[in-house]
Image (cartoon, rainbow, N blue to C red; front, side):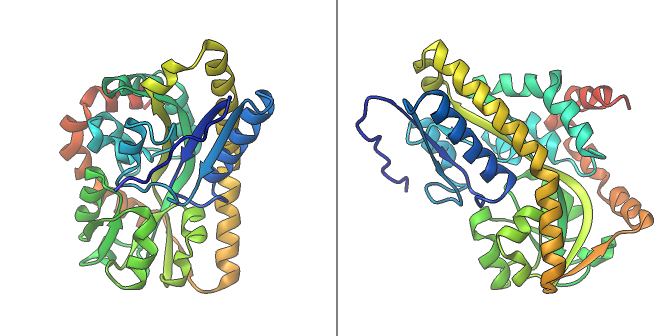
Length: 317
């Protein structure tokens, strides 16, 4: 059930920005930077209230909240858009699609990324930009280094057909759960492993319920900042410009610190000594990549072969 979030009566403009991760993650820090910039530049006329950690809405209901006007801004993971009627966004879930963050930036800031955002207008959404959280790592209660290590494991995944297929290709059983419920599910052995960027793994205390973390760098996790067409068109041009510029700076900030936050989390994880950290050999990484390659063939039609070709062209492959 959606919460009641009545807009307080005041002369200015209120932007409620809801997201599901912790404040000290790249997304959480970018949202706070956006708040500061907007409020400073509007001289307090525009107020931004950030609701982190699924305090207001979670994975299951945040998009409905946006559509009915209960919030003004969200930062959903790109994985969520496939089930909302935008299967082309599922290309970001393809395993081993990107080799590094520079390749991600080429796609998201170039024609492919901007065309994807423009397509959100089909459901009266406005895509305002992308935010990186880095590459995902595999965790479990045993080392996950070879395809055989995944056999029979119940792995928590986002509600993504591509990621579920990736896990099945590895021999695991995918279980779709909201992010906010993941740690508890791991602690109760409802699922035995998951995939996450290091900053999410650390800030959600998953290291207390997972004995092993494998640095697989197998997939990219990013977000799209979205608002509703109704809200966006209700703003005057000056406010749209102010908000857009502040958000662009906040996203640049978030993208710049993403690697640093993940490095910080890895150092903290190693110091805590609660979870063993494993680095894959090149041969192990190659075997994982070959094992999940059938996912590309399975989803080529759903994602759209032209989108995959456009990414490969952008990356000069």
